[in-house]
Image (cartoon, rainbow, N blue to C red; front, side, top):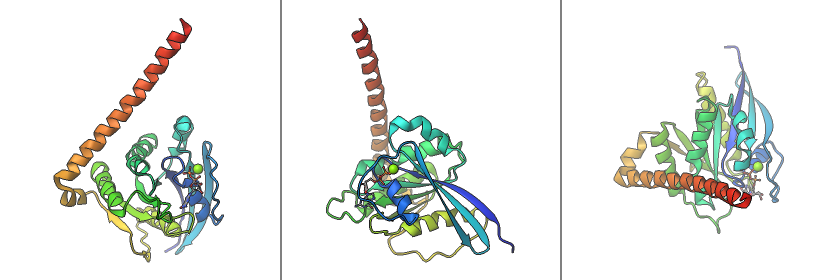
Length: 241
Ligand code: GDP
Ligand code: MG
């Protein structure tokens, strides 16, 4: 069978400072830099590879996590097929915000972004870690149940390089599968495949409760945002008068 050319657009999503830029740079072979410089807008890198007879170009868009860039973020979702959802194992909030990143990606891409992988980054920071594997898998199951997507979860470190290559291999593989090209990957240990059906089986009612709590928390956050905006409007009015 003759090979084909594929261009895949993949997005690196997650809160600020979880390690999106570092993961991209590590994957592109640029090594690891310990200092933190905010990504403004979006950065882009392109990786070519040959899988069997197929030429694949993986375009990697590294999006800024800061809300200030919400508008510029939007246009970058367009035409994307996949996303690496990244959280920092030191920061539970960055895990629990992943549902928003999924919603954001699906909405702003008009549904074209539909292939995901979840990465718990900074796995090298053992002392300050706050998210256990179980927590991450449990939350990934809730996400799968809620969204209907299948996730692969793995831990990464942009610092040591742990699982960075395999993360991109898995996402490429998932994308190729949609074209009936199936590559056998040698998966290291600790990789969890999470399908939508699993949540009910293992989560039971406590899973439901957690989901409810999470949804309530999201609503509270949304209300808080609205109040903050209202407060600003009132303040502006008072300042003017
Ligand atoms: P972004 O805002 O998501 O793009 O995050 P950056 O890639 O800029 O990383 C934020 C900070 O976390 C930087 O100081 C990085 O050096 C650091 N960092 C990123 N990934 C890792 C990692 O795997 N391990 C450790 N120890 N630090 C990391
Ligand atoms: Mg960045």
